[in-house]
Amino acid sequence: MTDEILDFLRASFAQVNGRLDRIDLRLDELTQRMSRLERETASLRQDIASLHGEIAHLHSDFASPAARLDRADARLDRFERRLDLLPAPSP
Image (cartoon, rainbow, N blue to C red; front, side):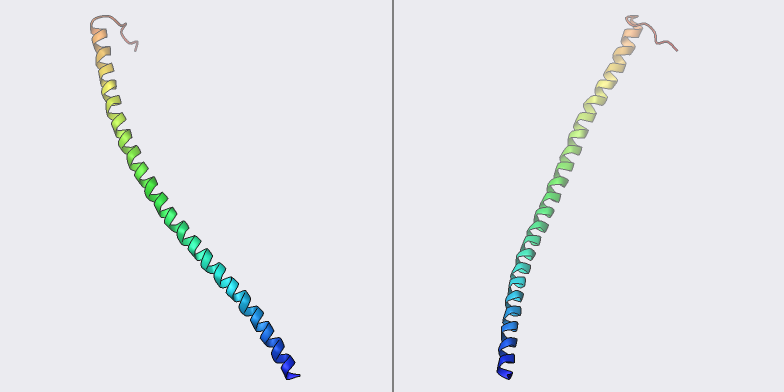
């Protein structure tokens, strides 16, 4: 009788060990995938920060000529009013 119990326990422990081995392999796989995702996320954040800097630089490049054009337009309006090419603005 004790041999049967021992055989049963050995078979049960072998099944449990097999399941634990599969769980351990799956956990290792998931850990590797998570590490890869963390690296890719960090890389994406760096790319986004770089793009943000480039966009800010482009914005400043476009803002300066626009301001100059606005000033030139205002000067042109004054010249045209002085030369009576435009009607005076109504109050």
